[in-house]
Image 1 (cartoon, one colour):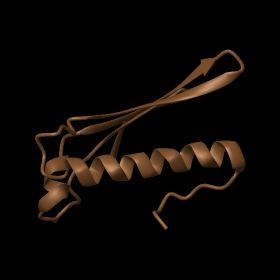
Image 2 (spheres, helix red, strand yellow):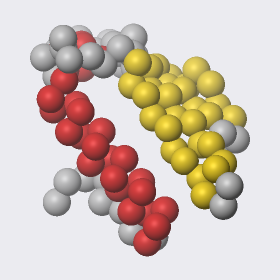
Image 3 (cartoon, one colour):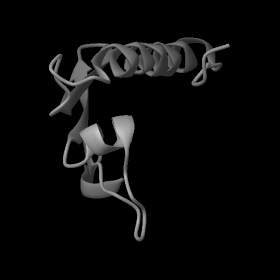
Image 4 (cartoon, helix red, strand yellow):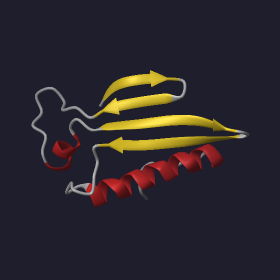
Length: 90
C-alpha cells in the first residue's frame, strides 16, 4: 500500500505491487484501487466512512474481499466500543 493522503480525518491508500513481485489472483485485481477512510464527527458520536474505490462486483475477488472488509470494519467498531477487536476472523 502507498499512502496518498493522510490527515486528522482522512486517510487514502493505493494498492501497489511490491518491488520485484509478480502479482497474481486477488492481488492483481487490487492494483490501482484505493481505500478511503473518513472520520466524521456527528454530534456526540463519530462515523467512520469507508470506500474501496475500484473494487466492484465484476472482479473475481468481490465476494472474498467484501466479506473480509465486513470483518475488518466490524472489528474496528468492536475495538472502538469495547477496546477489543477481532481483525482476523476467528
